[in-house]
Length: 457
Image (cartoon, rainbow, N blue to C red; front, side):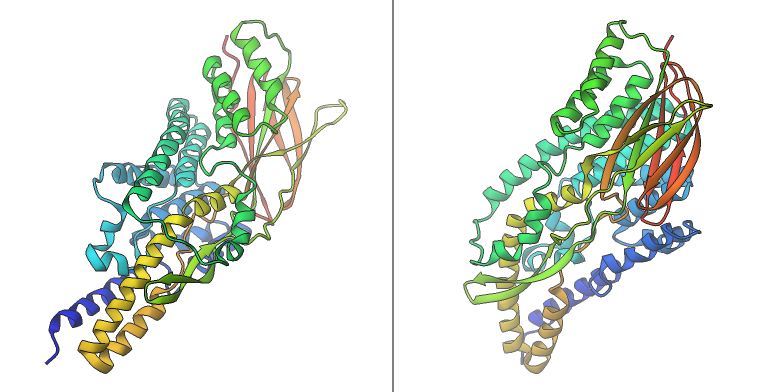
């Protein structure tokens, strides 16, 4: 009579996997889910996207869906809801920091932890996503007029980038200590060529010049010139090709030394273009002691949509129009690819261990449970070999910046982007800063004129 232990263990693994399917994306790939609310954001009723997300925020992937809903609410203009959702996301990330458990413990221990696919584990977020949460929350508070809370979030933008770099170094060191390096098959790099090309455009998946720049804009606007100077210099260090920065650094240095006199006001354009591309799945042969096993890996296509600048024209009374174009400060699509590429060695090691464990489990199930064991393990192997395609998909593909100097008064700003064109009235104050945020969803421009930051007397 067969032993009941393998039977119970196999059932436990199947239940664990299938419960993960209900809340993750094994049967309904996440990019297909996200296509619904991304499409709604380009429609005449962007708030419909919120209804797609409401029930999903109660799943095991709560953090991911809350990030999406907070961003969707922000685009749709429901700033209070966006602020509340981002606050809950921040609390979830902070709770993760307090947990003294390793990531795999979420799936159990021993063989069970190895057997469960990454896609069946609750979503824990990525470093570049966590940093963007604080940046977007800072913009929420700014829009709501709570400058003190905005200042706190901008400080966390800076802090989280420092902490994330330290955490990444520790994680890499720990991974090297805890597992033997796995030699990839000869065609491994060729299969990941698209991912490598997508990741090559950025130097870091963590350092974000767009958020450093916006933090500098905010601090300059409230008269915190020393910290504004630090932020602008950090943005220049991360992205030395951003041509705005030399003039910004010189201006803030002059302001800090009380040598800056102007009759003009500053207008900053923050242009968030498109959506970050979804991950794709490829199947790769992984060598184990039992031979080669085909396993699913997430990747990014090398065929990324290139950035397209926003053209901006300002007019006032009978003055000649002033025109500028935005330039890329941060390629979020490249940062996401870099984060995935940096994680490939760890994924390769886990997939190799998982393939070996699955082989052993299948052999025992076949021996102990006969036809049932063969059937059950085949079902398990079929549904468990899907790549983890989850990521925050309403983030912009590119975050761009532009700047104008205009005389005080009301101005008409005309904007041309991939999502169409629009004209908006903006106030400009002497020595002050007006931030115009433009979110381009591909078919629409969502425009927000933030409360102007006045020059400190």
